[in-house]
Image: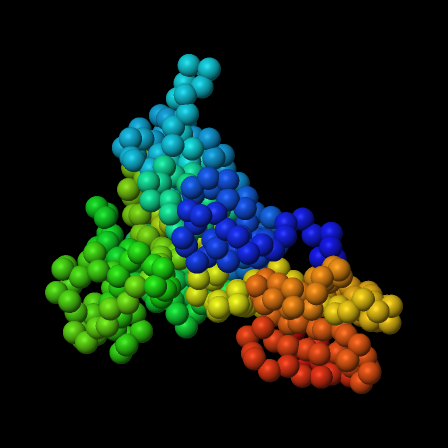
Length: 415
C-alpha cells in the first residue's frame, strides 16, 4: 500500500474531550476516527489490526473445537424476558414501526441457547461449542476510555454445551489455555493474569484475564507464587488469601479486563427448558459455559500497554503491515530504488506500507514511529552510496545498515 493513497492520515491533533492514551494514539496514527463518545470508525489501518486479531482468535477457538456462526445483533424481547435480563441497564432498546420492541445484543446467551436447542436433542450431539465475532451494543454510561469501554464494540463470544459439569470443567481448562495463547500472540502474555472474579448466582467464581495498565479501572491482587490474581471485588470472600496456595503475600495493581470465561451451568438452558436424553432415555439438564474477548478492547489495550512517547509499538502478529518502507529525498535515484524494493516486497508476499509522500524526512520518520509498524526500511541518497538500506526495529533504538542484495535474507530471518 502506498501511503500517499492511504485513506486516513496521521495527525497531531485529537478531540479535546479525548483523554485516554489509546484513543489519542489511534486517532493520531490514523487508525480510528471518533464519531461520538464510545463510538468509533475504524479506518484502513485500524481495520487491518482488527482483522489480525480476528484471525488469531479464530485459529485458537477453532483449535479447541469451536465452530463459527453469526447471530443477529437485533434481539427478540421475549427471549430476554424469559431469562430476566430484558430490563438490565446496559440493554439498548429499539421501538419500531412494527408495534414491537427489540433489543440490541450486548451478549448472546438468550440467542444461542434456543438456537442450539433447535438442532440438538441427544447426548450423542454433545459436547459442542459455538462462537461468533460480532458488533455488540451497550448503554454504557462510562464511555470515556477510548475503545477500551465503548457503546459499540467488536467482540468474540463463545458458548459451550455439555452433558455434565465434569465435561464442562474439562472444556473450561482447554478454553483457559486457548485464551493464554491469544494473549501471547497479541504481545500481552507477560502482563496478563488469570484472575478470580465473582461467579454471580450460579458458580463460586468466574475468571477474567486482566492486563496490567494504569489506564485500567480494576484493582487486582497478584499472587506471585501462583501467577494468578484476584479481583478486588471478591477479596472479602477469600479473606485476602490466594485461592490456590493460601498465601497472603499479594500485591495490588491496576488492570483492565481483556477477556473472561464463565461457567453458566444451567442458568440459561433452564428458562428455555433445554434438556437432552442420555443413553438410558433419561431427561437431563444441559450445562453451559461462555467465553468472551473484546477485539476492539484488546486493540486499545495494546495501544495503552505497548507504546512509548513516540507512538504505538505493534507486536508482529497485530501490526497493520510487516514493513514500513520509507523513501527519503526527492532524487530520481532514491525514488527508483524505493519503487524497486516496494515491488520486490510485494512479490515476496510481504505486507508493506510504502511512504512515497512528498514530505520531509522529519515528518516521515515521526509518522513511522507513531504508526508503529515493527520494521522500518529507509531508502535515501546516503544509504544508496553504500548500496544498502537502513533498517530499524520499532522496539529498538539502534538501526543497522543492510546491503540491498542481502535484504531478502535479512527479512526472512526477522519477519
